[in-house]
Length: 471
Ligand SMILES: Cc1cc2nc3c(=O)[nH]c(=O)nc-3n(C[C@H](O)[C@H](O)[C@H](O)COP(=O)(O)OP(=O)(O)OC[C@H]3O[C@@H](n4cnc5c(N)ncnc54)[C@H](O)[C@@H]3O)c2cc1C
Ligand code: FES
Ligand code: FES
Image (cartoon, rainbow, N blue to C red; front, side, top):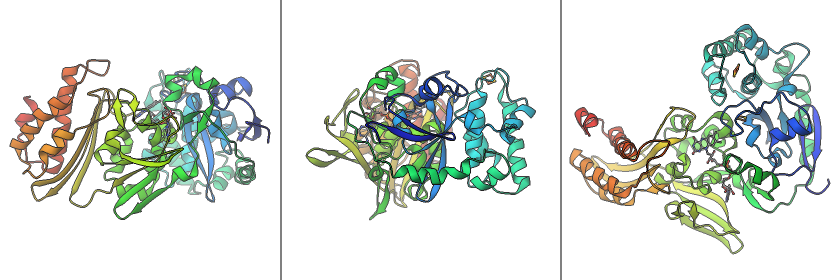
């Protein structure tokens, strides 16, 4: 293998390229391979018009996930199968394509390849095919002109047809029923062959899924030396041991969403993950990237702060561990040395007496960044608070661990009097500013209401409904 060669399957073709590892997959497929079916629209991962499937060997299984190729680093394709819309085309329309035609699911057609790829990816990856699952799979695809009802009808007819045929949806069956081209049957063996190719040594800017870096500084990334951690297997493990959940920083939101082990550590996982970005972005966004990008509204950051997490950093002088709450020193300023990498995260698994809750308010309920988000982990003995950890985002320059608010709760009876007291402390700890996500005043109100929602979650009768309305 030549120096800096990235090797992967693109549709049915083996690719060996020395294109810059930091370049974007969409540029590679459109400009270098002239596959123009994947569309370039927002270039920010927001619309799904550039969606591709990424097939990866996980143990003995070939797993496909959808990702937005406009912000996908080329280097993250190494050893994988990338499927563009052209790689799904056959002599006749596939049932997915046909369903879009029959249901009038396309007009200008810009979004259509993305919808077809996402829906085909759903068929390839779902354990049980359901209408709700199919709709979930297109949560990162936006259509500006057709209207979603006809696309929903296409999804419905597709699901009904597959269930009616009753043949199942593994690769062999999907090939046989002509949902996907026949070359898919050979991909697993071909990827196994690729795994024996040498792994490259890289150094440079640490790179997870690229969902932050490629939105903030795309052009700089194309030229940058990168140090990819997305596929670093030691950073992909999850362990529950002695009441502690430890997981690798290279795991994505999607990995954690699908993990049955992680679901045992995080209460309400299903509700929470649906609030986080879209299927495509969850498949790319690592937790390490979420913590290190230091956004004051990073959802996973807020959630992990409220779980009283520790982070484990590896540098030239070994591993050091610190509470996540002391990681953020100022706006985008971290207690992280240049040579250090965020290796893993650990948190005490909430026990039976602990109520953990995460809430987020954004302009759209799904697939939007938060105006304010808040998480709490409150351990109760009867009606007394034994311990509390609360974190809030969007109300200051850093993701904020509400130390004073949480401390004030400890050892006290949770009643409406205490709730009023902590509202005041909360307001003294936050410093929101007015911006595109809301005025400072509105964010103060949201902070109060989200904290109240946590208390109501513990004891619905704690507060009179009138108090919710009159602030
Ligand atoms: C369309 C869209 C929707 C989004 N929606 C949400 C949302 O709902 N909620 C939310 O919280 N975020 C959201 N995000 C933001 C983003 O997806 C997350 O912050 C994501 O977790 C970043 O992870 P990444 O692996 O892509 O990071 P990258 O872009 O790869 O990296 C981000 C930063 O972290 C550094 N880094 C990455 N991994 C490590 C490591 N292991 N050690 C040290 N440094 C590291 C990089 O050098 C870089 O500075 C969204 C982004 C997009 C584009
Ligand atoms: S072009 Fe919009 S998500 Fe890629
Ligand atoms: S058909 Fe035009 S954007 Fe969807």
